[in-house]
Amino acid sequence: MSAAPSSAAGGPAARGAGPRLAHPARMGEDATMRETAILGGSFNPPHVAHIMAAYWVLATQGISELWLLPSYRHPFGKVLAPFLDRVRMCELAAAAVRGVHVCAAEAELAADPLVGKTVRTLEHLVAKHPERRFVLVIGADILGETDKWYRFDRVRELARLVVVGRAGHDGPAGTPPLPAVSSTEIRARLARGEDVSGLVPGRVLEYLK
View 1 (cartoon, rainbow, N blue to C red):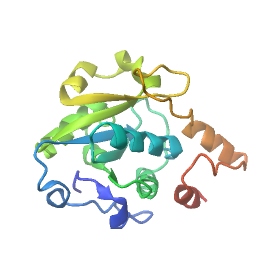
View 2: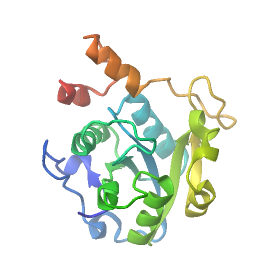
View 3: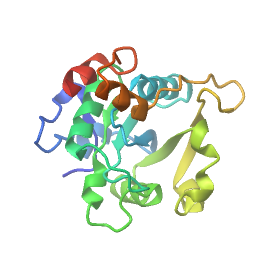
View 4: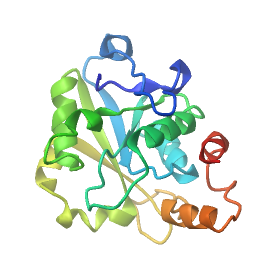
């Protein structure tokens, strides 16, 4: 499996099959240290605030490409939906925004004891794509939790940070707060049979059903 991302327009993976990922040469053969943003998360499921964050980064940060990077394993051990299902949902969500792709690179680290740790994923991506500079997108709501991250000092060496505002949390000056949409709350609403059509991209919602 390649660590390069799939394009949502290039034929997403089918349920239960491995994600079809674009070859690095097709995605970045003329990229000379081009910046690529990474928006990681459980995406359990991906929701509209994830897509808003991706669009904001592309629209304001001088970056033309952003990779949604689903966690293979939750860094704090939370139970997640199957990885391939979350990859597929990310592909469906990414289809709405030009420049957004899906990177399933953490599957390549499945046997690594540090899988799920941001620093290990970034080291892997930097090694696989030396022609790129990576930008790590994080929410203002978790900015105060970076002291709990494994080797956050190394994370900052490997990637430039871009902080996205979240409702109820102060982001950088001039950064609009994104809606406080929660995957946990979406799952709870779905379990109760409640409507989540305003919180989840339509194609993702169809997949969940």
